[in-house]
Length: 261
Figure 1 (cartoon, helix red, strand yellow):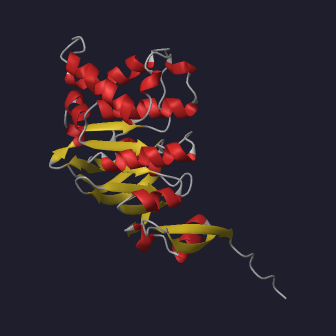
Figure 2 (cartoon, rainbow, N blue to C red):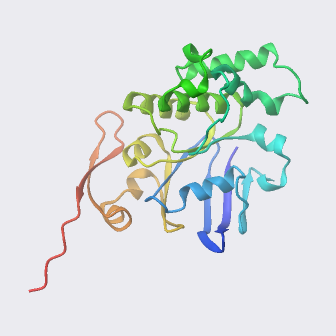
């Protein structure tokens, strides 16, 4: 299932935060959004998972206008992990993951054996099955993040929208989670701060700066020293990953401008 975002703009309190964005994530592709803090990445993703309604433009999953389908249908198609995802009550981990099955249940129906199997499998996939009986609020930040990813996987969506999914994870967990997302076969739209992780795991990148797309394409084509200097204010040296061949970046501060003599 593909995602098509067309001419999308977002206004909040009279301020336009996202300007006329058009992008596509093809079926089964992992597409990354990168850009400085405050560039509009999270705002754009909130429109995709329907926490915000765009001022203009559309979000389509294949031919379906996502903002026109009912909530249950939307939740069967798309699962999201917002950056500020939280739960206020101390559910167990198993109960939190089971929430991902609600779109597939009728009324207040009990979880079926198949539902429980899906949840157990999702926890195992993120390496958190040993946490099933723990209270969610007792977990570390990294453990919570893995449980919330398991909830999204248990939802059996066609599309995953992830806002900084590697937050709070150590490097081994970051690599494991992004490999899991990549191998899921789902269409994935994700915002990432770490440009090297984005280059390793994404098929295409969209660079967003001040609410506008300023570059798009395969990571090697997009992450040029010139663009990184202009958008991120850093000096970048490009190397190839010794195993994958993906572009990787070494950073320096930009040299200070020469003083006038």
